[in-house]
Image (cartoon, rainbow, N blue to C red):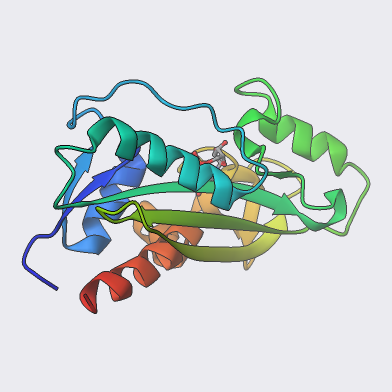
Length: 193
Ligand code: IMP
């Protein structure tokens, strides 16, 4: 891989940017760094479509300055088996902010079948707007109540081997996370270029 390849990450989420920087060995620029504040509507039916929508929106806005670089965008979701994959691609819009975990716990009230997984899809666009996709998955179970103070989103109700992601340190979670697995695949791909 050429030294310090430049990637524009189509996100302003500080946690995601930190993970991408940690793992990729590239110069990672956020949308805000690139002067873009607008975010597209995530109206795809799949994580893959939404990742592409976000990457393409950044590509269209950056095109001239992005000629020598890559753009990446990711979309993630929590898929609960007994809810037929809900909230899935709608994880960020499943309920009002602050009420999403409570809604999941209420829907699973009295149900012991609690298998679930997180999935991330990363879309990489090259200078010709050619997409490549990388996925990562983390299997676990929905807990019976919120536990733990760390993390974000659904972390405090998602258990792996009896501990929720919010009970793990950031580095413990990042070592096993769906995003980490997708980023590892992206890294391998970039290393081969
Ligand atoms: P995004 O596409 O990565 O922004 O994530 C969509 C939704 O899934 C948001 O509501 C997040 O809270 C949730 N989510 C994504 N990744 C994680 C995670 O690692 N832990 C907890 N929730 C997550």
